Amino acid sequence: MALAANLVIAVAKAVGGVLAGSPALLSEAAHSVADSLNEVFLLAALRRSRRPADARHPFGYGKERFFWSLLAAVGIFVMGGCFSVFQGVEALRNGAEEKFSGYVAGLIVLGVALLAEGVSLLRALQQVRRQGGGLSALRDPALRTVVAEDGTAVLGVTLALIGMALHMVTGQVVWEASASLAIGLLLVYVAYRLGRDARAQLIGEAADPELSGRIRALLRAQPEIDSVEALFTMKMGLDSTLVAARVDLAPGLDSERVEEVAVRIKRSLARTFPEADQIFLDVTDRPAGEARESPAATGERGGA
Image (cartoon, rainbow, N blue to C red; front, top):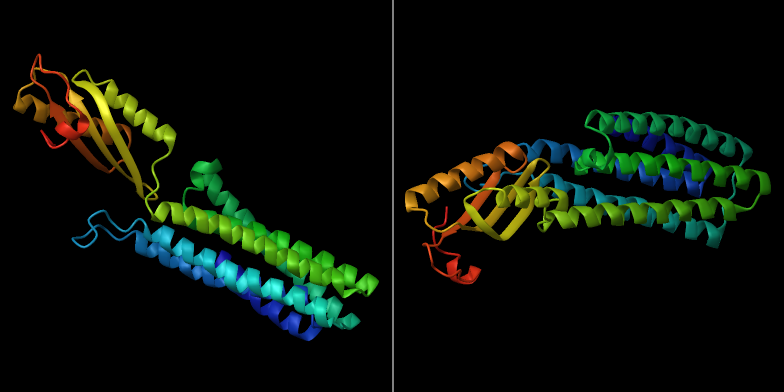
């Protein structure tokens, strides 16, 4: 939906911007072109991230979403933000002459663009609500990027409309140039935020502290676990989380019992936390009466 809207709007803005000689309209055209390319990136992310795990990628391809979202952020920065700032600076330096017919054509194009972008934003927000609403639904980097793009597009078109209208009324190009600069800075900021989130997920971001706390609490609640020495989590995809824990078992358990306990704990974790689809336990069992050793000394014993 967002891709179709952006393709139509990009062509309309580009034609209108060239005919009217409007820097704000050309900035918005660059914005829509960047958004269109980004939607292609996100479609690739959705398709590629669903591939099943294989020998080359045993943890699956969930992080493909994060990689393509990072490329989308770069596209917003380069094609949208930088070009818009350039248009604004050029308009301030050289001025821009527009005819009344050019103003009318530009305002009509922007009005239609505002309507189309608003519809696309509403559809994206509806999808957020269908997935539970709030920040939890926006964990999907593709959906988060679409919402950010559409929200920015609505605000950008509004700025372009105001700048062009003030230029038409006052005859001062500074209004339209300022709108173009504001659009560029807005896109740079959005690109920075999206890129920062994608980077954190690509390099191995931990699960939410609330989820980690619940996992640790479940482990501590097991009667056979004496202590949880370490707990590590990492997001492997939208609905995939790796969990690795090092636990000390209560003394007196034989090796067969240790194996049974490890299997039961892993099944309990998987059942309670469906997103934890990769679970690894490093289990250490101490004979009765033996003093506890450091995690470094016991980390290789009894692994399960």
